[in-house]
Length: 493
Image 1 (cartoon, rainbow, N blue to C red):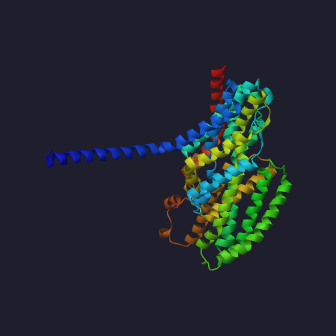
Image 2 (tube, rainbow, N blue to C red):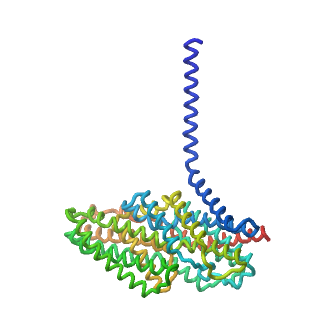
Image 3 (cartoon, rainbow, N blue to C red):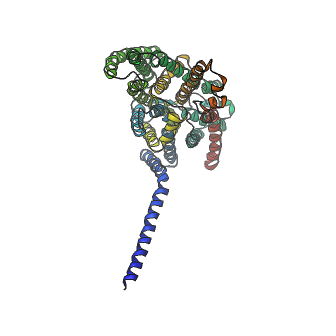
C-alpha cells in the first residue's frame, strides 16, 4: 500500500471518528433534558412498588399501588413549585447559592414532614364535601384518585408556565370537582368554599402589606440613618427576635400536631419566650460581627445574611410539617378506604405515605425546583437580604394572624404576595423620592413619563401570569378532576 493510500485511509478514519464524537455530543445534549423526568419516573415506580410490598396484589390493592405512584408524582410537583416560595428570596438576595438552597430546603422539608407532620388529615380537604353524600367506598376511592391526579397535573402545568400556585388550593379544587361529579352539587359545603375563595385575596394582600411595613421600618430605622452600623446593632437583634418568636409560634401552632395540641395563646407565649432568648443571644453576636464594618448598605446586607438563611430553612421546615399532609391526604384516604372498607372525614396518615411525600418533595426540588426559585427570587422584583428577610418574616407573621382571625390562607400566596408587596413598596418609595428631587427642576431636565414607566420595579407580565394562575387554580383543578373521575368511573364501572 502506497503512502498516499495510507494517508487517505487515515483521513477517512479521522473523519469517521469526528462524526462519532459529534454524534455522542449531540446525543448527550439531546438526552440531558430527559435526565430529570427519567429520575422522577424511576421514583414514581419505586413508590408504587413500595405500596405493593405493603398491600400485595389483589385488584383493589393495585388501586393503592396506582394511588401511591400518583402521590409520588404530586409530591414531586410540590417540590418543583411550592418550595420555591421559601428559598427563592434567599437565592435572589444572593444569601444562598442555588445548590445550597436546594440542599437546605430538601433537608428541612423532609424533616418537617417526617418529624412534625400532622398524623391526622382531613381527607375531604377541610370539609368541602359531605362524606355522607358519597354512595360507596369504591366511589369515594375513585373520587380521591381523581383529586390526586388532577391536582398533580395542574401543579405540573403551573410549574411549566412559571407560575407559583398553591398546592393546597389545587387539592381543594380536585376534591371539589370529583365530589360534585360523584355526589352532586348539593354535597358541597359552600360556606367553606367561600372562605377558601376569600383567601385568594386575603393571603397575598396581607402578606404584601406586612412585608412592606417591615421594609419601611428597616429603611427608616437603619438604611437612612447617618450611622447605619449603630442603627443595625440596635435594631437587627430586635428583628431577629421577632423572626424567632414568629417562627416558634408558627411551628408550635402548625408543626407540632403529632406531638401535642397547642392553642393560639400558648403558641404566642412560646413565641415570646423564643424571641426574647434570640434577642439576648443575637445582640452580642451582631455587635461583634459589625466591628470594623464600613458605614454602607453593603455592610447591612452582610448582617442580614445569616438571619435570612435561618428564616428560609425554618419556612421550609414549617411547610414540610403543614402542607405535605394536605397534599398526600387523598392518598391517605385511598389507603384507609381500601384497608378498612369504609371512609371517614379524618384518617391517620401511614408513615410510608409521609415518606413518599417527603422524598418526593426532595426529588422535585432537586430536579425541577430552580426554575420557580429564580422566578420568585429574582424575576418578579430585585431582592437583597433586607427585602428577602421581610418576605420570610411576613410569611410567618401572616399565618399566625390568619389563624387568630380564623381565616384559611395559602402559604404560597402569602410568600409570593410578600415579594410583590416589597416590589410595589419600592416603586411607591422611588416615585415619592423622585418627586422630591425633581421639584423646582426645569421641565427639560425632568424624567419623561415613558422613562418612569420603564423604571417600574415589578415585572407586570409576571404579576398578571401569577394572579391569573391563582384565580383559576380551584376551578381548573375542579373541572379536570370531574372529567378524570367520570373517565375512571366509566372504565371500572
